[in-house]
Amino acid sequence: MKLRLLFALLAFQLSFAQHRTCGMQEKMAQIMNNPAQRQAYLDKQARFNAELQRIVANRSSNSTNTVIIIPVAVHFPSVSNSSTQKACFRALAQTQVNILNADYNGQNADIVNYANNDAQFYPGTNTGSLQVQFVLATQNHPAGTGLVNGDLAVTFGTDFLGSNDNDTTWSGYLNLVCRNAGNGILGYSNLGASPAAGDCVVISKASFGSGSGCTGYVPTSPYDLGRTLTHELGHYFNLDHTFAGCGETNCALYNAQNPNGDGICDTPAQNVEDYDCPAAGSVNGCVAGEYALTMNYMDYVNDACMYMFTAGQAARMQAWYNTIAGEFRTNVLGNQQFVQSQFNLYPNPSKGSFSIEFKELTSNFSVEIYDATGKTIYENNFDHATNLVQQINLDHPTSGVYFVNIKTDKGLATKKLVIQ
Image 1 (spheres, one colour):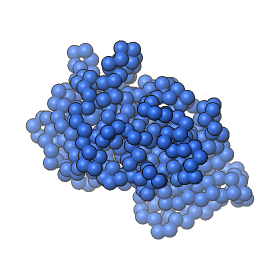
Image 2: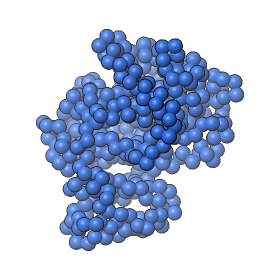
Image 3: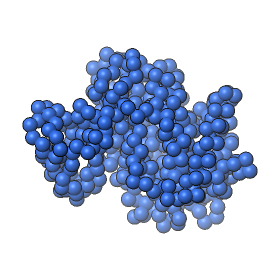
């Protein structure tokens, strides 16, 4: 990645209503100007580069049936702990997590635009999937947070206060913090963040989640589809912007002799960011005959016009996850694998009517179904159930991929549902 991105302050500030802005460069300048933080960053990057070299050398490592499970905590520092709207904010948090799961697994509804319309401009570039499941933590919450087993890891006015970008109370989680991100900035994260340090991704109140939002936290067009967090979380997983400069035309791995390499060969180099909603193939890249990948999540276009990571970006994020995997807590999601093994969905695919069959009687559980945009289309609590099978009937759903969340007293699990 280009060193100028690590040392330079953000060069411009545009109004929220006009253009996307990101504070990653400013955050990295702070880190690189602190000798201890700078050395810690460089040491971890060295371990990451070794892991990325291993993945690049063994391409089969990029394809696995293993799903990465990442515990998530969402924090609203400016929302009072006595707020009567807590349920609304918890639902907003889940909506944003749903969007991440769709975007990072290449299951967002608009990704079909690439194969159907846009791939012709980008030979050799394929869409990528991290094969990850982001899950709001529900068990073994940090002491003193007031949360008990079964509560979602969503806090109000108690953590990440002021302008803090880390909180060791929440070390071991992917922390999402919704607050004012700075003058004209939609969000930011470290370039390669540390769960062990309690690092977070900061997202502004007007670009968190999608839908109607909650009082004072209403997603605002054109950044109202939750993709600001998709972009900033890319930085958390060590992805640079696609517009890092023409010096990155060499896609070799980063090393002392090649300080501009990032190991991503399927993302055409470009020198400046793109805004609004440019058509595919309409912006020239640094190399003659190549075009800027304007629909990539790591550019600056509007939410509705970004829809994909590349396979090379997914491999790079996988390498960062492998570098920090041991920093995530493993006992905060309940027994998710157990929960998944205890129920089946059938028929799948379906026409919108399907059954949830439990292997053991589960008297109290909840069901939430959301589409590939993160929008919840069904939710219900089932108390004192006496049957192993629960019938679900959706009202005229459109065809596509959906996700079914099942929450029991043992944890939360998600399964994919296809509706034809």
